Image 1: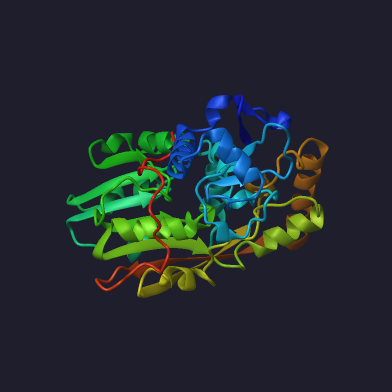
Image 2 (image 1 turned 120 degrees about the vertical axis):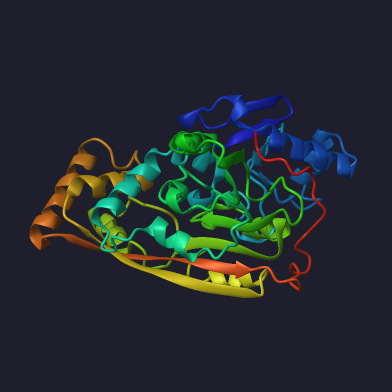
Length: 376
């Protein structure tokens, strides 16, 4: 699912899943153009120097280990070179922007499958989105930006509670998600603005917002340091960043069940931003960080919704055909044996305040290579 740039132009490089050339955004081409201009190089000369290892790979390029006469460059969303992805190794799916955009979050169908499981079998009947809204301590006149809004469930579940004075911008890096958000909120025209935004490059002026929200988003961002730098920048002093995520024990019984059924099946990779390590990551940027935890669990009594949940996050090519039918039988047998399947839920939200004296970590805000414009 990688796209490649070569001297001859742009083409799809993965025969197993050929994507049309336009899937490489002009945003990434713009990055390469501006980077080569800053170095005073023609693009071909830049490729040659990079291939020979005479300069470090810039943070947004990931070159292959298989060089030929025409070197090829793998394109990734902007990320830090300290993220721990060795050259030649694939980026984890959880933060692989091409995979997330073209498959996992192309539209809301995978999220819908997961929502249905939580909606029907959660022990805490109050509901996650109502609880998240409870955590917001905002004045009646506030400018709010949500990053990774998805289908806008947070706002759909709380329409009756939104003050008239809130100026809300909903954003996502997936056009399909943003379209679904607008459709879900079509009866609330005028209350929301919409924007296609990459959290690593937020196209607003410094201090533009009173609050930024990222609901289960940061573990998808390749360069969290860059995203946090941008979030810190667009928040006004005294503004608040709300960021939810899960803990290491979240859905652990499901992972165990799936591995028992088929060791080759994998849901998500290990998450890089968790309840256990989020405070340390956010404290690099915000002096006041508080964690609020949400108590809940799943008691599942039907196989169908659980199988749909698994398919929404696992490799569908592994769980297909007879194997999928076998998985359904396996889940049904587990429910028949125990009466239900209990699954731990471990979720929460960080509240991070930008104080007047907060300063970014040293060396964390390099001169930007491109104007602040998200992917096309």
